[in-house]
Amino acid sequence: MLIVQEAGGTVSDFFGCEDYLEGGSIVAASPAIAKAIVDVTRRHFTRESIAGLATHFIDK
Image (cartoon, rainbow, N blue to C red; front, side):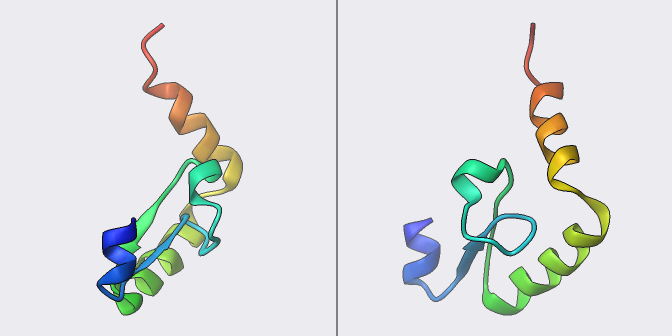
């Protein structure tokens, strides 16, 4: 994350918020690409659906 930010990039969650460490999703890219990704992810995901994805991949 620090490397992306030092290079001029943006780090956020799928909704453009800076709480990516707690949110369960991350977007790290140049500002223009990050905006495009967030525009798409906001339309297709909710915070609840992201939380559900994290538990889907945990082997029980």
